[in-house]
Amino acid sequence: MNTVLSRANSLFAFSLSVMAALTFGCFITTAFKDRRVPVDIHVSRVMLKNVDDFTGPRERSDLGFITFDLSADIKPIFDWNVKQLFLYLSAEYATKSNALNQVVLWDKIVLRGESTKLNLRDMKSKYFFFDDGNGLRANKNITLTLSWNVVPNAGILPLVMGSGHMSVPFPELYETTKSY
View 1 (cartoon, rainbow, N blue to C red):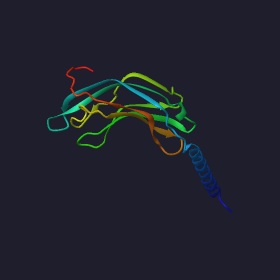
View 2 (spheres, helix red, strand yellow):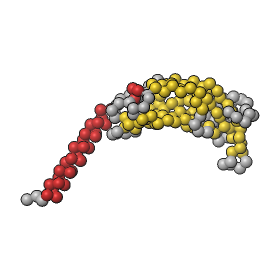
View 3 (cartoon, rainbow, N blue to C red):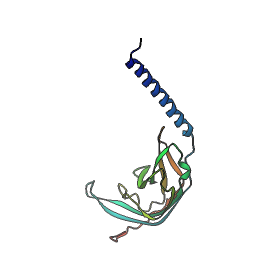
View 4 (tube, rainbow, N blue to C red):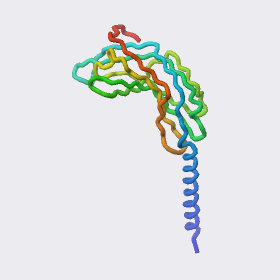
């Protein structure tokens, strides 16, 4: 005859199997959903400085400052399987020394239940926009893109790029003022 512990072990193992099957069912219902939404990015001000780079031997590097407007409605992304979104604005550009440079300029976490309308005006970069040299000066093709990671209750963590981006030309001259 089976003991109480043996029966409890069987019940526990069966319960875990059922919960794993239910979790997989939850994941598969939203696994193939298109999570792209239109994004509108406008840049109102670009400034470029040449500053001391303390990571190298007495070199100077480009430091960019961007003021931007961002609007998007991210409500269609949220469903019952989305816990939160990690939004980030990144800049991609090419220089002579690197074929691809990617820099995160701004980020935000949006939890379920918070406002899903993004209407940000005159936002400044949250993080420094440093280049490891002088690749920002007179660069005509710096592309700003809003992307997000979807954090689900169950399943994979998809990385999604918004369906709108903007190319920004940087100035040929450095600013000499102290403030931004």
